[in-house]
Image 1 (cartoon, rainbow, N blue to C red):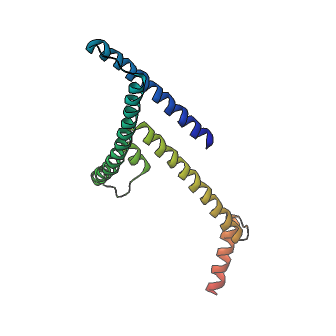
Image 2: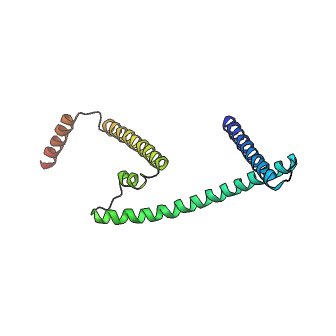
Length: 158
């Protein structure tokens, strides 16, 4: 976790440096055009304000994206229901979900990964159930089970 925090800090510092450099270049252009001078403190203040405003824009954009994703998901789910009715099915499959997410590579990758994890988990659970049922039946083979069932049916008829 500390490595992630350090990486984020380094990235933020690089972004801040890039903003500072760009603001400095813009201030030089304006200074030449308007025949004025900008102090280093002024350039630093403009850079800091610009960087903070960009952070605010990023937060607003993230919240908007979450809102859109939430509402878009509802819309896509409604669309999926219409498609299922058209296909005369009542079950949404993972392939249906992947089809809706195909334009977002990261979302499609995430859904595919989770789908594979679920399939693997389900397979393991089925194998465990089979083992338990075999153990509960005394480890008999299918032929022995049929013989036992036939014998019990014969004794019930008598």
